[in-house]
Structure formats: C-alpha cells, structure tokens
Image 1 (tube, rainbow, N blue to C red):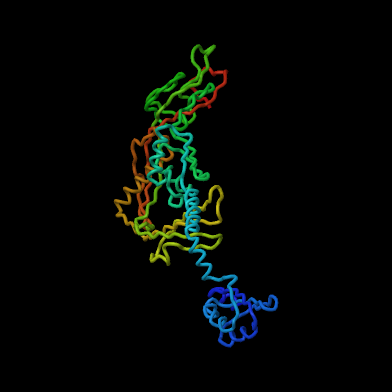
Image 2: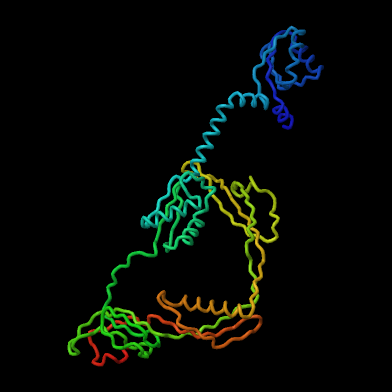
Length: 404
C-alpha cells in the first residue's frame, strides 16, 4: 500500500509492448534497474505492464535494441493530475469564484424591514443601524448578532419600549413598540378619589367630580378627596371622579456607602480573533496565540454560513478580547456623604411617579462604621396622592366622611 501511494505521487504509466522476445525484453529492463509491475500477457506477442514515469523516459532505447514496439496506454498520478488541473485551471477558477460569489451573496444583508414604528422613529432606527454597520450590502459576518443589535437599539433610542430583531435569510425584520403610543380613552366606572397615604394638600386639579377637601388640609390614608356624586343629596348623579390632588408626603431612606470601592473597568486595549467552526472543530484564521492580557473578558459573535437558502454546518466566529483593570475608587468622608445623599434621592425617585418632586430633605442620623458612611434621611415629597375607589349607586348623606 505504501509503495502504491509513492508510485501515485511520482506518477505511473501503463505500457504495451508488442513483438518477439518479450521475456528477453523484460529481463533487460529489470537488469537495468527499471521497476515494473502488473505484467499481463495478451496473446503471444503482446504484454502490458506498469512502470514509473521517470523509468518510462529510458525504455525506448531498450526497445530499439530488442526490436519490440512500445506504446503508452494510460497515465496516472499526481504529475498528470496537476497537468490536467492546470489545463482546466480557467474552468476550475471560474467555478470556485462562482461558488465563492454565491456564498458571499447568501451571507449579505439584502433587506431591512421595520414594523410598528412611526416614520420619524423609523428614520431614527435606520440612522442608528447605519452607525452599527447594519445596512444593505454589508456582510453579516461583520455585523453584531441579533441580540447585540436589539440591545444597542433599545439603549440608544429613547423612544423605544421594546424592539425585536430577527434575521430571516438575508433580511432583518424589526418589530418595534414605542413608548409614546397614543393613549386609548379610558372608560372609567363611577368612582371617588381617595388619599393613598397621609399628606397635607398643596394643590388640586379636578376634571370631574366634587372636591371635599381643600388646600392645606391634612388627610389620612383612605380619606375621600373628590366625590363622584354631586347634585341633590336625595337623588345625586354618579360619575367617575377624575383629577389630581398633590400632597406633601414624607419618606425615610437608609443608605450605606463604602469609602473604598473596587470594580473592573476596560482600559481600551483589545484583540480581535477570527476563526471557522466546522462542527466541533474551531480553526483559527486570524489572530493566533493567547492574549498577553492578565485580566480580560471575551465577547463572542457566531454567524452561521449560508449557501442560498441552506445553512451550512460551518460558522464564522469573531472574538473580541478586551483587557480589564481593577480600579479602586476612594471617597473622602464629605464626598461619601454627598454621594450617599444623591443615591438616596435616586432610590426615592425610582419609587415615585414622574410628576413627583422632592421638596426638602433632612439628615436624621449620620454615622461611620466599618469603612462605610451610613445616613438616615427624611424626605418631603410633593406627589399626586389621589387614587380611584369604585362607588355604588347608594351614596351616604355625609360625603365628607372617610369612604373606605
């Protein structure tokens, strides 16, 4: 088997010899070191055999002396294969270029469809997609995956509540949900407005209903603010009370902030690696060796390679390796107190409506323990305290009492 492979690499030919004295001719060849095999007799004056290409160059001189005629029937092996390939190189290169072009076109972005967005928002989305490189004619290998595109669009465009990104063939399909959608007219059933918590009334705006409290009144949780019943007490009309009642409310916040904080940050250094994944075998094509970074994080994007409408069992992988460093942030005591107060404000605002505002804050308790600044803060908040409470057609005579 080993000899056959060697003969195939160097090339071999099938020779036909005709004439008399064939055995004598074969003996002359072997005595002169020419290797022959697969000798077959065809009649009394014809034989065929195989030999190496380099030996075939010398066989003619022996044939002339013996009076035999020789002819070459078949040539095989690497030299002849390369010769045929070179002869047909134009066709082979054209076929390879055609397949490569089809594969490139199959992995190119040919369409971007956006549904559910207003024209202004759609323009903003397409502009953001251009910045990310998601555009018609771009190779999909050099574009973020759908999760990355979805995350960047949501973070960079404030008008979006949610965006779904799907890659179907060569087209990106985006389904958009905007934040500022037109509000549907709310159909309210008869209701009163009551206080959701204890407060002092500072401002009122009543669209519908009859107010039963006034500015500077102190109200308790559950107390009636705006009645949905008005008119004659014996036969009142019932409606859905609507409006806003702003009151001064009070909150307490407890915050602990360490003076020294350690966290990881990227320093801007990164390395790009590219590879092809064949099943479970990853073959690097650019960016070899291990990164020189001591601490790093790796972001991996994998794209399946497609040919026309079929997905091949081959993936293109792009890895971005970013170096990270341990950063230590140190606050002075006064800086920590200021930051703790700002943190407390953010925590309070996260639990309030958008129209609520902080009127005043006061530090009740301040301490330093275990390297942390500890603050207990009292906040005065102006917020809408009115919430709806359904009412029945039976209305009590005293409307100013609590309607719990």
